[in-house]
Length: 286
Ligand SMILES: Cc1cc2nc3c(=O)[nH]c(=O)nc-3n(C[C@H](O)[C@H](O)[C@H](O)COP(=O)(O)OP(=O)(O)OC[C@H]3O[C@@H](n4cnc5c(N)ncnc54)[C@H](O)[C@@H]3O)c2cc1C
Image (cartoon, rainbow, N blue to C red):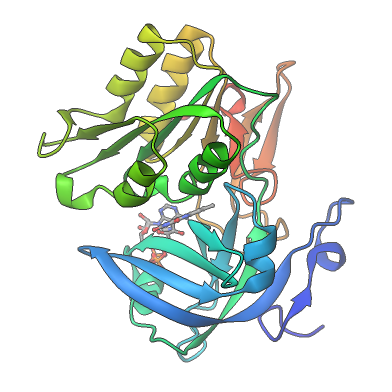
């Protein structure tokens, strides 16, 4: 078999252990632009027309910086924005370790191997009257396309965003442009209200009726938001982050404990069965 990372092809139906055939592409994407939006946080725009056309809100990709063949494994990144006319996709990433350090060093014109679109994405049920989007830190990345799609569909929504400090609030220009309320929380109070976004979720759920909540951010935040939603009887979907090897279900390196609605316990792969799960079906540890 050819390397997964070499040349453009559809790997969806051939490699997966499951019967459903997803249109997952392995391709080389040219870097169109890269710039810092905060200290250690970058937007990276890539030419990938098929991915731009197909990606659903909440899906992600596996990307390699392609420097001297390392890192060996790709790194998962949410698909933050798409431009179908230009054929581009954008990721928003924070430098954590070796892989993202190398990714921050790529230059315009570099060609990077990626596999996409991956995962299930968010599921907007029926025709909601009002929904809430909750993003903590870099967790806003997979949520912005959802906000954009809801705005295009004319769905009423509100956004609650949080960050450690004002300088690290992300996607604010994009979100404000959508014209819906954006409630801002910072840990140090340098912008918006002081506190965690979960405070805002509780306040808004107490004040108004919301049909669904969509959340991504640090695990403790998602767990807190899940508990608040459960208390208010509002369905909540969370986009989980686990370290993963392949990104499409083969290596089983990213399993979580899952509890189905009927109480059945099982393991689920964040990359393939997720990354988006009903918050009530996640077995929260710790
Ligand atoms: C589905 C999914 C979507 C993601 N989307 C984004 C995104 O849009 N933007 C973004 O900046 N990051 C995102 N992440 C996290 C990102 O993949 C990791 O930060 C990255 O893989 C770290 O690689 P590294 O080589 O720099 O760090 P490593 O050297 O591998 O690790 C350094 C530190 O980073 C943290 N880390 C590593 N992997 C993960 C992980 N999978 N999740 C959380 N923390 C991790 C750990 O604390 C680790 O100690 C996503 C993760 C998943 C699973």
